[in-house]
Amino acid sequence: MSRSAKPRRPRRAAAETVHFEDGEQVRAVAGPGHENFAIIEREIGIRLEAPGGGQIVITGDDARARTEAKRVLNALYARAGDGLQIDPAEVRAATLMGDDAPDSEIDAVIRVPRGTSFAGRTDGQRDYIRMLKNERDYDMVFGVGPAGTGKTLLAVAYGAAQLALGEIERLVITRPAVEAGERLGFLPGDLSEKIDPYLLPIWDSLRDALGQKLSDKMREEGRVEVAPLAFMRGRTLNRAFVICDEAQNATVAQMRMVLTRMGEGSRMAITGDPSQTDLHPRDPSGLAHALNILEGVQGIAIHRFTRKDVVRHDLVARIVDAYERADMK
Image (cartoon, rainbow, N blue to C red; front, side, top):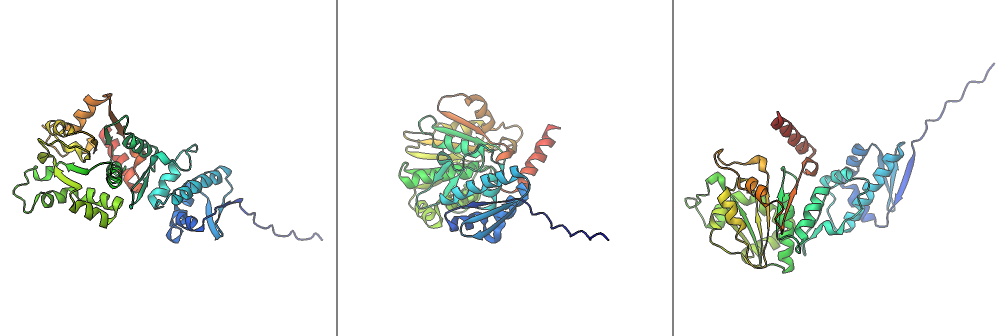
């Protein structure tokens, strides 16, 4: 009588352990309730555990997936060490980085004294940050592309950093108020109160960069100034960083006017999405016109974001794709 075969034990999946020195940084990488780990697991197809002692165990049979997970974990750990917040958007961006991307790119980080640090999450964002920081070659930087790419937030963060460092005297933020036809005189309140509803995203970005207290203080001191494009005429802005946001809603005449406001020691960032203009069909967008005639002009950098740079929410990138496909039909 033959012996009955012993049941086979289930084969364990291959596992690797990554060792880190700082347990706090490991917890930051894992995220609240290990929500960041869950994103990495879903995107790469492995399983992560943090048993303690600065260790992270990567489990999965695919060696390439384990290697990719190590790269992502090392990149996020380095960013946590730089004081950057490791949120779900940061994690998703890290999983999209190429295999040859370095763990930390110091030249693509904006550090705001007494505020927050901002690191480029995609190749496009890192290139944009380098353009903003390249004072030697570029006095004017265009950041154009779809919503959610960080073009406004990073420009505001850079301006806030320069202001906090004392490199500039004022941060001037302007935006076309097309919803009110830029006829703001009939609205109650002073200039700031009139234009604030159109600049709420800017103030949100400024608070993200400087914190509520410092943001309010600089605003009260007049070091942060807001102005609709219609009120910029005739001014010369010296030792300032000027941000023209939602520039796709500026007319050709308005764009020409604002671009020539730069004075001694000033730099400028122009942000917008040429595909989302709210102007009347008979009024061509000043942003599209400027991009066409200023390409290649010395001292001007033009960075074009793509849907790969969208870091708000996975769904936003898919929405951008859907609209782009519809526009091509």
